[in-house]
Image (cartoon, rainbow, N blue to C red; front, side, top):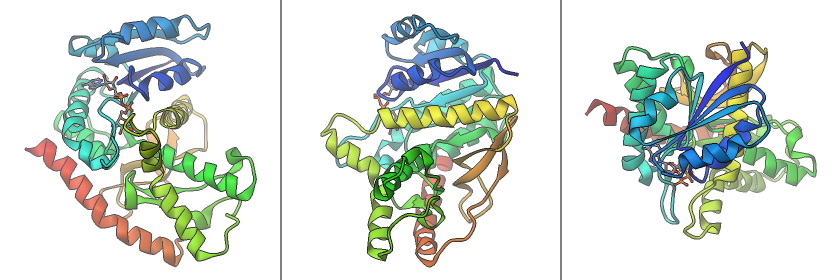
Length: 317
Ligand code: APR
């Protein structure tokens, strides 16, 4: 199959619009449905539809148009929600965003139970458990099909390493494991290819912390104007493309994603996975960690456990 319907839920926002722009340029996307509560949404769809690329674009605004947007989707990318302001952590967004993701998951269970979900809405560590619990309740849960988008952490790590090494950042591969918030973000610098040109452990630590706090770097620089949108859209489009290539039957499509996992105590965990016809076909694990990375993992687990429980409890209550 090479004909795919992709939905962007939250399509009119700071992430949603550039994400839709990138997806409109993806030859694997034949139908692109834009859903948002914002009244501008049909206009965003008309605007994109004037681009001479094959994807047919439709715009859907408000809850009464949600089912039509979601119907028969192959992939639903979700950036709907409120973004961070300075001084806020991703967890501060929980209450508002949890209800948004829950409601979207309910509609996906009804209208596109086989769709692959790529969740961008923060806090991702808790949103993936929320969507999973909703789909479970509806009896349509397949853990291979629910992904948290951590691609931006990989993209940032590669950008920073490219700069340090003086090489094209597109040539850098680096696994980033764990979750998508602060200390749960674990860049495995020891596995970077090419090797990171830093010998000093203090510099390795500083680079690790820069990757963990890169989102906050953007929030501060935007001075009240929101969080990362353009780089997030780039990362979301990259993951969506990988998911589509997997669905189409390409072999060896590997990306990091935050998924249901039994690798660690945390029931959801990000690391490299193989994407295929059913979403996540294979969990590649995270290989050998050095001592520093083991410490990072140790610090991440309690935080992840807490974030996961917060998500699961939200659906249970
Ligand atoms: N259904 C669909 N769309 C919604 C809903 C909803 N229930 N509620 C809000 N939205 C839409 C808004 O109308 C807006 O167009 O989500 C979009 C969010 O856009 P922005 O406010 O610009 O936020 P953005 O920077 O895109 O971030 C969105 O992604 O990375 C995360 O932390 C970020 O959780 C935040 C989300």
